[in-house]
Length: 159
Image 1 (spheres, rainbow, N blue to C red):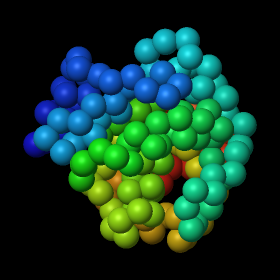
Image 2 (tube, rainbow, N blue to C red; image 1 turned 30 degrees about the horizontal axis):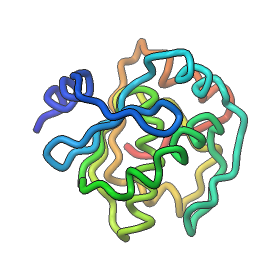
Image 3 (cartoon, rainbow, N blue to C red; image 1 turned 90 degrees about the horizontal axis):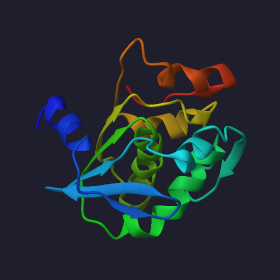
């Protein structure tokens, strides 16, 4: 599938809601993660305090709100069968965690496309960055979501 096809699917209906109001779906072995749609999403987006994420052999410091969202669905996502991840905005931020968790559990990277991904990780080290060579960020240069967390010291991973 091409990028337009992935974007059209991440904007289409058919979501499962779990955890702290996170929407996801799997279509043809692709895990899709939806963008922000309500007040609870925005409360998590704005919870930009740094938090330690230690559920991997490479611990890192990350955005607390996105960490909470990921941890609220982690057990369910780990049961799903997928090899590609597509996220949009807040869903892209969660895709960072899903991608890293996939690598942690399986020892290889999935293919991930992150549309409008906010920066999630505080000063990622080399070991962590090496886990994101198949993580592609697609940006609209006028989208402030991509840039906002950079002002707080968070950084992007991937290409």
